[in-house]
Image (cartoon, rainbow, N blue to C red; front, side, top):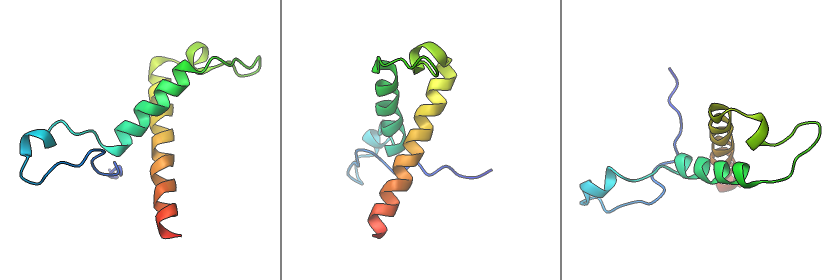
Length: 82
């Protein structure tokens, strides 16, 4: 099984603060959360495709949010190499 790149901690903590490390979100989780908020708040509705609120299951929205997060992580790596 392939390991998913989570981008590391979104909010790095000091090396000696082990208790805070247990509660740190990864960049992937943070990006997915932001994407999901946008998808659910977006009110535009195309007659052909609709919107996430009306046409996706809860699991579908979550899966799409992580696809956006993965794309953000890939884009940030490309940016870093240029």
